[in-house]
Length: 243
Picture: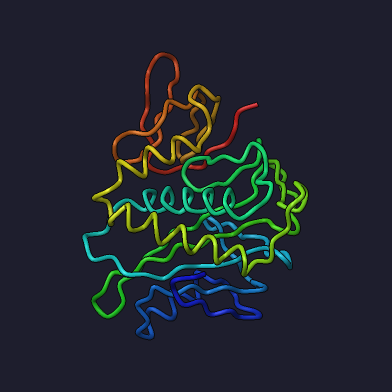
């Protein structure tokens, strides 16, 4: 069962955009916005997000009561919740399901989902939105990375059924995170579900592109990349598996 209200829309430009509009209109959540179709779905760094029919497009609106913590921590919380929901709701769960910093859900080396974190001040209150997109029935063809979808791995749950599982695990992990105070438990859980230490990665920050091996997360959740005997810390960037 879903513990937080869900509003399902047939069509919306973007579930994140709709959640932010609801916040400006006075909503404080927790509230899930689920859309059958997005006409202008958004990913990180201003990218568009393909919104194929039968896929999951949903956003959670909630409030932050502390000074705004790191956005990538919220992405890690959401990643753990989505991972656990997929493991628990799908029989069998896809083999080689894993997480990639900060916001991707992978099956093997192929992306099957992403997370978009946004926030805004509405009526003097800091509100947060966690957008989740999962390729359930279909996956877009992207020139720069492999993609896949759940039905290609023998499971094809309905988006609402899948959201019920995600919402339950989001409630659990947001409570554990406790707006940053419980992040060590989230960090440990994320690392247990992520790429193995030593996997080769590249990260593009827009002004710099680094190639190295995954060295884990620092205590705040930033990515650690080992390159040439040095370990570098990244708080943002586009991470790709190096081939």
